[in-house]
Length: 370
Image 1 (cartoon, rainbow, N blue to C red):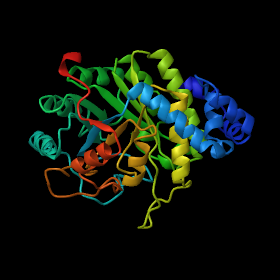
Image 2: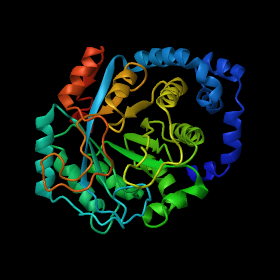
Image 3: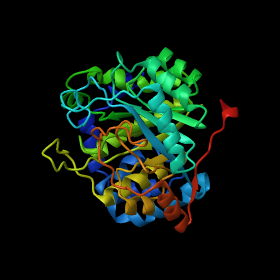
């Protein structure tokens, strides 16, 4: 399990190692065809800042070689905001006095139909809060089963499951799982996740192993930028990616690094603010580090950043996202998990991508592969 490997890696020593990287280390990493995690540390270090243009060119080159000009399009659907966790940064926090919704089968199907009217979406991501008693494996499996007539590629972003749970949902037609470790800082993790299922650091961390054991086709990983030092967190994710690729080599992988925004209503304030320039540096570094990994940007990021990065390393994007259950068919609205920054319609995103020479791909999976 990866938790055993992570225990061997010192957070503080890794942070210091990144900050000690030199100009020579950066140039050495840029000259390599295949980079190690140590090279990745150099590329995300402050020493690499003067090389941003060189990194952008390399990132674009490797992206074109592997993905061409394609951008895979997907849409998230929140099927429930019922949650038993106390994540201090999340709108679905159990103590938040908000309306809780668990969509019925009829409501879920109506959401699917409404999404199909927005654009030719074939890739859907089903998202839920963590409430195993009221919206557990059977509920999620049924939502996947109901999605099969409408979508070719179905992924889930739900509570970590055991191996049998993942296998059951795979059998219903699920193609991929996305899970955010949030932060790899073992000691600080409990501060952000004090109670609930998600407070178990090892259970969440080793969920990726269980996905691999269950034969999940696609695994998406992510660190939430804003909790701890972003450079150290994404380095731990790089270690994690290499570990998974070695042990579950048949699986396809994607990475995501959503940035938290300062709250305007007095809510949780991020401890770390990542600049646009640093986000670009991280994106280029991940592409140079791994030429095959999907790099995904959600609608958390504003339109101008998503459009610019679509030519330089990003390969997957969401569009016209709603982050509350029932958001597409216009059921009674509930609180959003977070507010999207890119509010363009799917057709507007498609037009913008085509204008800059990208080719939006709405379907990249077929039933015959299941």
